[in-house]
Image (cartoon, rainbow, N blue to C red):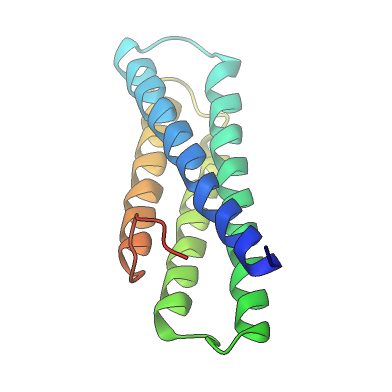
Length: 138
C-alpha cells in the first residue's frame, strides 16, 4: 500500500467523522437556540471539535492533493482544485464562529447553528464536484 492510497483512505474515512460531528453539532445548537438557555461551555467545545475535525480533514486533503499531484501522472486536474478551494471556503465559514463566541444566548447558538449548516452545505457542494462524489473509489 503506497502513501497515496493511505492518504486517500484516511481522507475518505475522516469525512464520515466530520459528517457525524456536524450533525451532532447541528442538533445541539438548534436545541440550544430554541431553548434560549444561558451560557454553556458545551457549545464552545462542540464548535471547537467541529472546526478541529474540519481542519484535520482539510489538512489531510491538502497533503493528499499535493502528494498525489506531484508523484503521480494524475497531476492537478481542475475538479481537485475546485474541491480544495471549496473546502477551504467551508473552513473559513466554520471559523467565523470566533466572532460570536462571547455573544449572549440565543445569538451564539443561532450563529453556531447557521455557520455549521452553511459550512456543511459548502462541503456537500465541494464533494459533489468530485467524479466519485460521496462514494469511495480508488
